[in-house]
Image (cartoon, rainbow, N blue to C red):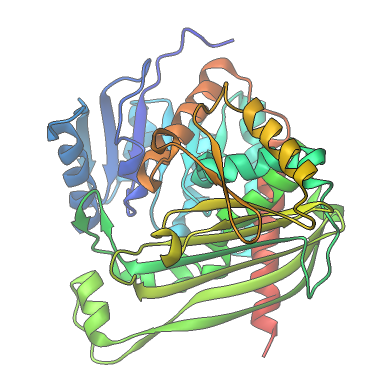
Length: 423
């Protein structure tokens, strides 16, 4: 047990705003002095500006003190000074596996934004990094925020209630047992300000194609919901069936708006993809789409279906629901007896989530969730970080986490490989 451990954060080359979101709130037992090692530039300045915003806000301000080293030798300086014990990574995905390997080899704990790898050739390096972390008694983990959305939590919980859901069907390619779709946008606001993305974000050799980036969350949820706390072996449990990818085309004006950089021609970014695969014989479909900007009042959206022998559990986040995710229970036969069972199960969740209720719809029932349980995207980073810090302090990360991270990155990189072969 490591209850004595004081966590000291190091932020390494923060090229993505997710690095700052880890620090949107403070944490007990975490030193408020954070050492930052990065090259000089706009990405570093944007990161520090977000931290300053969190420190200076009127409601629940943070108290971070950023000690910054900016120089071309930032990486060697970090290893030499050893100013902390947890390295936070969120930035250029091409460099990430290098940073992971070197940090773990040097005895640091690592909390990494997704994706950890963007090419299949780097999966063995990630596997070795996990083995090294285990040998050194450190924790390597990725930031899976979607596990902390209440609709996803309840979808998982209800899928375990056989009287409501039945059991998960095997499905087919045409009718998968589980489907997860995500729509994202290049131009958006973060912490109330328009997000300026670095130019490399639109270079898939550095950011990664969409089919290996955002899909990381969706593949993780397929594993986490369909096979809760089951250790997966990607060598035998995952079978990729089909995959394809296609570009989003950005006009010069759109590219300039989101990067502040002028270009002369349109840019095609392979940000979209879909994969069909089986996981322990269960058919799954995962897809991601990137548009330039959300419609008025909208934002990133999520659609999810789990099909059981008694009901489907469906999450919709669309204009009809005000772009808020809503979970529906849609039984094959909506009898009075079924409703009685469903209400009894919802009542049983009241001790954890008081105020849950059901709203009758044409297809079944929507699960109405009090606002206090509905976290926005930014707030979920604190939940992941708290979970991770518990792993580091107590040395008790569940045994299924590492094999399932490897299974996840095998799935995404195998899909990319197959999509590149497709016409």
